[in-house]
Length: 235
Image (tube, rainbow, N blue to C red; front, side, top):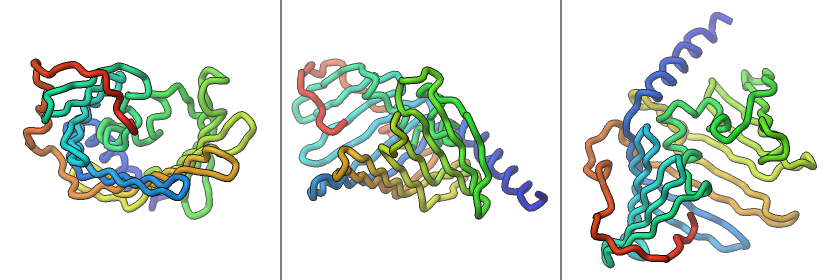
């Protein structure tokens, strides 16, 4: 028990610091594999603890996205000075890894934000901890979610349907330890879209910087941007 005290204190310290953390910037590569096709999207992300997430994409052309936990979303194309705006639940960035870790929600991977409550905690072999979450309102979302932690950091997340089958798995690894922030640099999600099919999404964070003063944190869509009805693909 005594050996765990320094670890627990360190995690508490990290959690407090993370909650106070204001900004983090990172280069992000998202590689998606579905039906044998591989798609790679790269961006630079600028996230504040308030939940505002600004991303800059340069392919196939330069565009910016601005989102927040409330589902407000904007896609700005500077070459045309056009902006697409919408507000929908699936546009919310409250499940974004950067936001979860700098806002202090990494402990439950944001499950509390989505209406899940802790139902059971179990100690596993190797010092791992497994936590089982269930929806506060049965019938909404997954029937249960399992979260596994190592050294009190999340390393595995699984969602189950009503039939007891896993519908998605997420693995978090390669944690980087920086002043006031601990962040997984690799996140791999497997979504089982059919019995014999799945979609694999691997997200890699690099060149991570905390509390930076990059002007992109202050980016705002120009007021004279022309509204457009284009629908963002892949959001």
